[in-house]
Amino acid sequence: MLGKTAGGLFWMARYLERAENTTRLLETGQRMALTRANDSDEEWGSVLQTAGALQGYTARHGEVTKDHAIDWLLRDPANGSSVRASIKQARDNARLVRTALTYEVWSAVNSAWMRIDAALAHKVGERDLPAVLELVREHSTLVRGATINSMLRNDIYDFLRLGNFIERADNMGRILDVKYYVLLPTAFSVGSSLDNVQWEVILRSVGAGGGYRMTHGQRTTPRQIAEFLILDERMPRSLSFCCRSIVENLGYLTKDYGQEPPSAGLATALYERFQGQSIDAIFERGLHEYIEEFLSDLGQLGRQIEVDYRFYE
Image 1 (tube, rainbow, N blue to C red):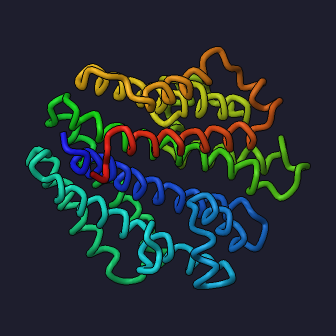
Image 2 (image 1 turned 180 degrees about the vertical axis):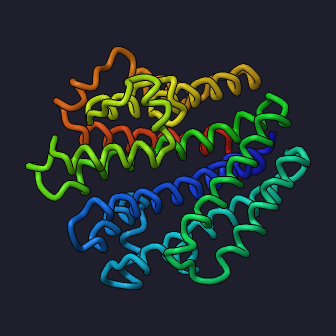
C-alpha cells in the first residue's frame, strides 16, 4: 500500500474519533458544571485544556466563558480541531482514499459531513446542544458500524483501526488526567462527595456507566472507576483495551508485510505497562504522572507509525 493511502486511512479514523470524543467532552463539561455551587464558566477552562484547545481559545477570546467555549469546540473556523473541522478533515481524507473504502463506509462518512455541517452552520444554543451532540455520536457510530460490517480484514482495515484506537487512548488519558490534575478545586476535595460525583460524570460521559455497573454493581468509588477505565480490557475505551487493539493491528500488518517495524515494539512495550499493574500502585505513584508518561509514549508511538509506513511519501 502507498504510504499516502495508509496515512489517509489512519487520519480519517483519527479525525472521526476526535469529533466524537470532543462531543463527549462537551457533555462532560455540561454535567460537571452542574456539580459546582457557582461560577460554572470556570469548568470550561478544564474542558478546553483536556481537548488541547485552551491556548488557541485564549489567544482568540481571552476570558473563558461557557458560550464561547462551546462554540470554539463545536464550530469556530479558527479552531482546526473543532467538531466541524474534524469531520471535514475525516471526509477529505476519506475522499483521498475513496477507492480503498467500501461504498457503505464512504457513504456513511459523506453523510456525516453533510448532516453535521448543516447542523453547525449557525451557533448552537444551549437548548439545542444535546441534540447536536447526539447527532455527531450517531453518525460516528454509523461509520464505525459500516467499517466493521463491510470492510475486508486486510491492511486497509488495520490502518483505520490504528487511527481509531490511538486517538481514543489519547482522549481517555486526557480525560483521566484532567480529572485529578485540573478539575478538583483543592486536594481536600479528594474522596469528597464532589470528587465522587465528578468521577461518576466522567464514567457516564465515556459511555461506560452500564458496563461499570455490570462489573461493580451500583456502588461507585474513584478507585474502582479509575481501574475500570485504565486496566479493564473488557471496556472498549479503557487504556489497556486500546493498547491491546493497537498491538493486534500492528501485528497483522507485520504479518502482511513480512517485517516488524519499530512501532510494533513500542506498542508492545506500552501494552505491557498494564500487565500485572494494580490501580493502588498507580495511585501511589500519582495518577497525573502515570497518565502524563503514557500520553508521551503514545504520542511517540503515533509518530513512529507514520515514519514506519511512510505516510507522507
